[in-house]
Length: 130
Image (tube, rainbow, N blue to C red; front, side):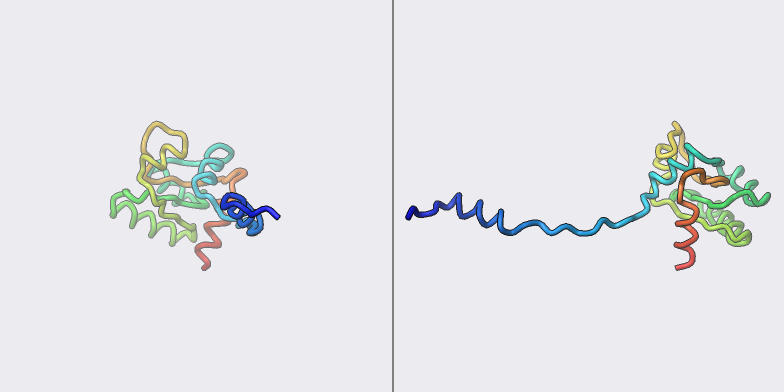
């Protein structure tokens, strides 16, 4: 019988260990869903336009960038809560939010009036309930 070399022992040990497959976890990728809403639905950009959308009752979701001024953020939160509209604080800056939306400028606040093919509104409502 031939002796096994170090390389063959290592090869056998890696082959026998076998990788375990975990079930895929369905998570909401916020960036993709925002982009899908912009592409397929009706979205309004800017603090003033978002405020108008909230007052008229068209808004279904408000997204606020993390670097929005505190006064603007508080006013939007107050109006959204008053109208029963969920709101999300985006972790990135306004420039990052603008880039995700495909715009060459920063976006501090946006309102989704019609999500189109995006599932972001239903996911935001579930997050608010928890």
